[in-house]
Amino acid sequence: MTQDNRESWLNRVAAGMAPLFEVLDAPLPARVRVAIGFTSAGRKGKAIGECWDNRLSADGHFEIFIRPDLAHAPDAMPAQIAAILAHELIHAAVGIPAGHGKAFKRIALGLGLVGPMRATTPGEAFLSAIAPILDAVGPLPHARLDTDGESTAPKKQKTRMLKCECATCGYTVRTARKWLELAGAPLCPIEDHGRMEHEPLDDDDSEPEE
Image 1: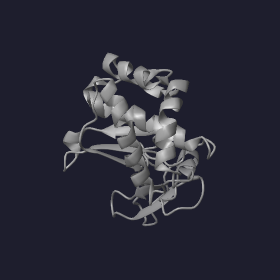
Image 2 (image 1 turned 45 degrees about the horizontal axis):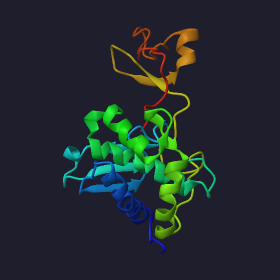
Image 3 (image 1 turned 180 degrees about the vertical axis):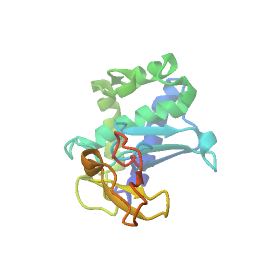
């Protein structure tokens, strides 16, 4: 069966995994919504998946996001994304406050996930269990997104120009930090107004992450 979009595929896989959770006495919540998208830290963040508590959703859904720029080969991607989805579904099943503690670990190991609980990977048992689900759902309509190219995202400002202002008349100019460090603030062109004041020379010229 071919799915129309990524979200349809993800939700079908989640539904297919529901019986696996039932066997472990950890039924999935009735309202779970899954999507491909960057996590709250943006594309520079390290998290490959994220689950938001249903109390934060206007219609009471657990909201799961899986980032679109995973680096695995296309043939490995469906199982990789299914394993990330399983990890986030465990959070929904045990509740976000449970973190990666005992309740989380019990279900993760029961599903066949291995490795540190904060960064689980699919073990052989998981791959065996998920294979028929992936076969039934069909190909994943997704390809890795290269985030190093062109987009409509704001360009990072490489050199921040600092504002200098005359305290007497308000005349303003902007100059690079290096000139303020080398020569100090410029003089106001109006006679006797003296040297301008400038913004602090902090150590962080970078823009905040999205």
